[in-house]
Picture 1 (cartoon, rainbow, N blue to C red):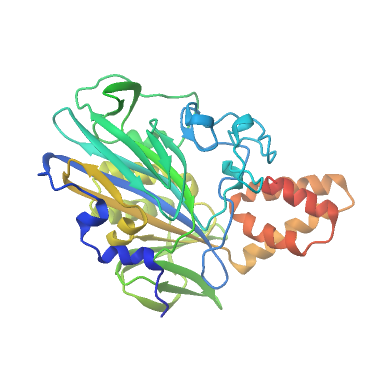
Picture 2 (picture 1 turned 135 degrees about the horizontal axis):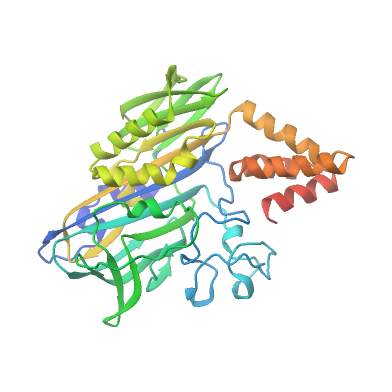
Length: 413
């Protein structure tokens, strides 16, 4: 079995060295919880494919959220303007895009990676007002979105000093319309306010929110081998739980696997018929078993229910704590009484049938009939970002200039 790159060797370090805690006595009144998702697209061999997870003209976050590509990060991310370097719409950088020394764009639509780190949120629980400082390193990736305003963005995010305000009774920022950012607020966590030079900002939130894109190893790989599922735990830790979700032909089938030890396994695809309500209940139970509070588990599932349970074959799994600490080293001062971090891996498996469907749609891009070309274009856009790896491959092999132009437009190039 191949060994993982050195990022997982961090798991062998003493926990306080990894987290960067000071030796001060812990705050006995403070508890910190976090949840989030690592999303990957599996190739035919199970290895995560490189893709551009932030492509697209529409936003799934409210406009007050901050994002990369902005000069000084002093304004919200979502502006729908054209980047002056790459021409992407909706990247949020506009005239402020800073190309690298080769002239390549650094806006969110151009960022490539194998992992989309989606919506980690950090909650605080305390009965008294107090200040803490918090930093999350992300050595394998780039922070792309966050809220409230951070003191510094690098290969990680530093919020500086945060004031925890259990008595705060004011509101939080909102925008008209439904958005899956808001369910994360439905917990008993203490509101937070960022302080800069001891002067609080005007921004309040129920959590610290951040997202990113990176290329780094994850513990579990999954692929199809002649209509059977191959799982490989490439870490040295036990993966606490795996849920296989197969939604095809208007029927949902699932299987739940506990305690996946290191090594490879070949399994039958799920046979147990289920429904989205049952799957949500199972996931909430697994999250609570890992240490989240019930309201936190519900908030996480509510946040992603419109994305997790659509048609397709995907694998959800709970990351070992050591893997989370290696990928996202966390530093909090003073040290809390307890920290619980529950990260969920989500593997999108592009089945052969799904690949064929995408390729079939792509053939319509070169049809002599303009209406057919437009219909195929819109259909591929509806497939979403997970069609990108297949389209990238078609683009490399394609000779038809019309097809190439349309694929580039779909990919945001």
